[in-house]
Length: 96
Image 1 (cartoon, rainbow, N blue to C red):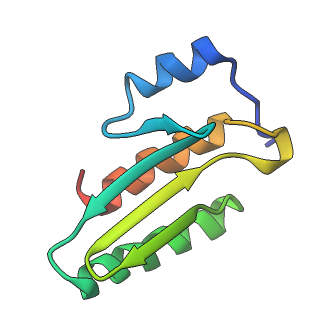
Image 2: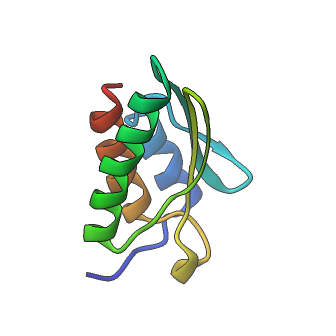
């Protein structure tokens, strides 16, 4: 399946249905706070397995219990349907 670049109206429509995610610097953005480092890193590991299966990888940053995630699709030079699919899976993993 090929990623489809979304238009601004499509992005805004999807954002309204994707809990907690915002648009920052032309990327989907979300920050999570976990109870501790082990939980944060465990969730990141679970996301890594999903991302690898999708062949769609996040940009992320972790310090102790905080995880910051940005999503965009390099091949379409913007936000695609893949980004929203991964965002939903990330929300499930983090229990958000």
